Amino acid sequence: MELIIYHTETHHLQKHILGNDLDAGQILQAIVPGKAWQCARSLGAFSLMGCIVTPGFDFRDFQFVRDLPGHVLHFKGEMAALRHYL
Image 1 (cartoon, rainbow, N blue to C red):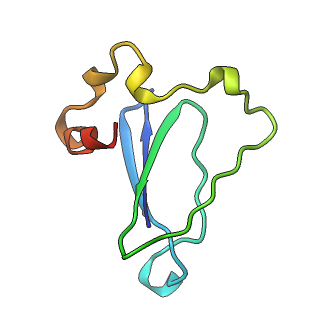
Image 2: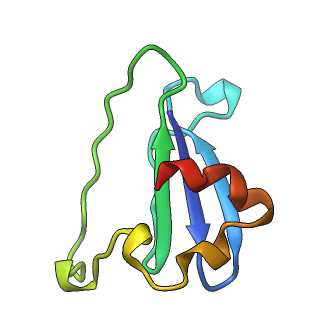
């Protein structure tokens, strides 16, 4: 599973491969910080993924990227390839 995290304040894009092959650089879990956007894609026939939130998370602060005014301004350069996730 590839997890992609975009930090909206710094415009930094991170890509992680989640899996159990630690020798190949895969990681078991990742933390997506507040104000960051995330998307994921399976790298195989299927993937099972879970997402949890911690204390401090408030659904009133949650929005889908496609619903944010001006979101398309972020989708240039390296981010342009991620538009289809919207």
